[in-house]
Length: 140
Image (cartoon, rainbow, N blue to C red; front, side, top):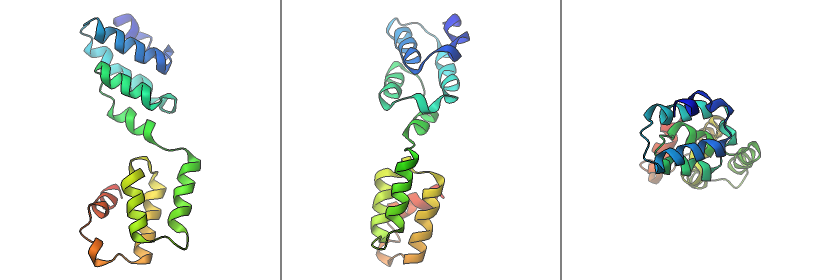
């Protein structure tokens, strides 16, 4: 575990998953290694697939910070959501639904766009207590 921990920067995402899984399956108590894996991987956050992150979590690695990086959508997807929110047929309900479905993958710019568009379009009173509105205000 000590040798693996000192060389984590050389590991590919797959290697990190395999190291964590192997130590977990063998019952090796390596809390420092499991603490170091997210730190080592954060610098290469875009390299992790959802499947690899899930395997790390299954192995017992605390990955919340990595998971948020891996969930971020590609720039093209971010642009697609922005276009959908600024289209002429966008409604506050449609924007809030988009936030509910994909908000955990939104960039800061998309949250700002969503808030601006909803303010510009006007939020119906019926939606004021909607949980999606709370999610948007929390994100902003």
